[in-house]
Every structure is written in structure tokens, then in C-alpha cells.
Length: 229
Ligand code: PGA
Image (cartoon, rainbow, N blue to C red; front, side, top):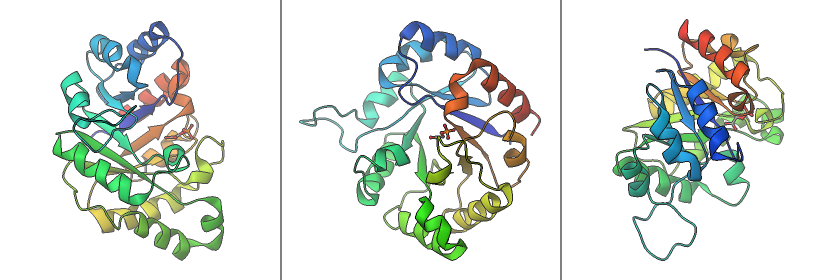
């Protein structure tokens, strides 16, 4: 199977026009573009080859949940993937129990769910065992595995420019595969310079790319690299 690049645009770009431009530039079969909610429809409508994903979802179908978006709404819009439990959302207060509900609701609505896990710097510094224990705990409420993808994103490497060691990543990814038996991505300051070192690891199914995914030249270079695997 080809290795896939998931482009997490986060709260970027600022206009629909720019979003459409980015979408056209990343429209290849082995890419999943993940724009902010207001641009989902416009992005989906211009894509010919890439898939589209959302950055979050709620676990109820409808009702009095101001500000939330249901999995069914995303599905009806033609969204195929959804990111759940990103560290930037966990930082805002999402916990493992809530995240598990989102995973379940997303899968039941027919979406492919990308569950983000990963340790903070304080845990990383304690060593391998501590990291593994931390990650194992993040799975304690996860029951649904069908259509689940996991993204291993060490928090200290996300948006920091700090590179994790591909060997260490491959080991943690294998640890996750032993827990969940699902494809596992890596994410955390990936770019055209380090993409190969992660993609060449057989354990890693693809990359969840943040910053580099909103830089057209960078992302197109990464697409070329990913196509070789
Ligand atoms: P980054 O983000 O590539 O900018 O580190 C990755 C992510 O948050 O998914």
C-alpha cells in the first residue's frame, strides 16, 4: 500500500480562496487534506484525487451542543476522515474518555478516524518504558478498531521543529501496532528534509503533516517523496 500524507492545516489558511489554492496544489491520490470546517465544502469540491478530512468531531448526532459538529454532518458533506484527540485539542481539555466517544461516533457514522496519541516532554525524558505506559493509557477507552488509524505524535515534536529519532519512532509505532493492530502514522515537525527517514520505516504507514502542509512547495516535495514508497 502506498504511504499516505495527511495534511493537517490547523487554523489555516485565512480565506477560502487560499484554501482552494492549497487544495489544488495537494490534489494527489496519496494525500488527505484536512482544512478548517468552513473550507471543507470548497476544498472537497475542487479535489479530483485527494481525500478530505476534518480536524475534529463531536460524539452526538444532533441537539443542544453549541459549537459542535456531528459525524453525520461531516459524512453527508463527503468528508472521509476525521482527526480525533490531537494534542492541541487535548491541551484545551479533551480527555481520553471524551476522545474514545468521538472515535466511536466517527467510526459508527462511516468515517475513518485518525486518533492522535503521544507523550509530553516530561514523559519522554523518563525513557522508553514511561513513554509506552503513557501511550498504553491513552488507549484504555478505545474499543473500536475498524476504520481506525492512529497517529503517533510526540507532543514535544509537534510544531516545534524538534525531530524525533526515526528508530525511536519506529519502535513506538510497533508498540502501538501491537496494542491496536491498525495502521500507524507519524507526526511532529515532518518536512521534505526528514520525510524519507520516517517513510522508509516499514512500520510507519504515512505522515500527519502540520506546518509543512500549508507550504505549497514543501508539501509538493513531500508528495514526491511519499510516492516512492
Ligand atoms: P507539525 O504538526 O508538522 O507542524 O509539527 C503536526 C500535527 O500537529 O499534526
